[in-house]
Length: 82
Image (cartoon, rainbow, N blue to C red; front, side, top):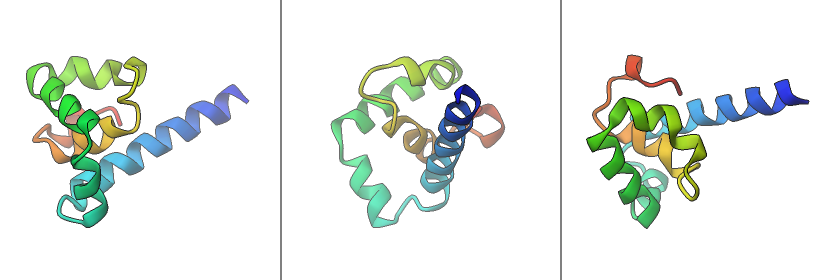
């Protein structure tokens, strides 16, 4: 069960990252970027990109917005563990 939960979480993070990276101008990504959590995530990513990517799973309220924000940001794909 732990393995399934870990795999599901990783797959979801990766899919949200890809959605943010490839579909930046799509209405769903644009709608997500209008949320306050998204703006907060982008501020953290700009200040501490690698550290934020490693710990975003543990920051309350930013769990879903973070992979999309990382995808929209200018962080190179090889730096993202998503």
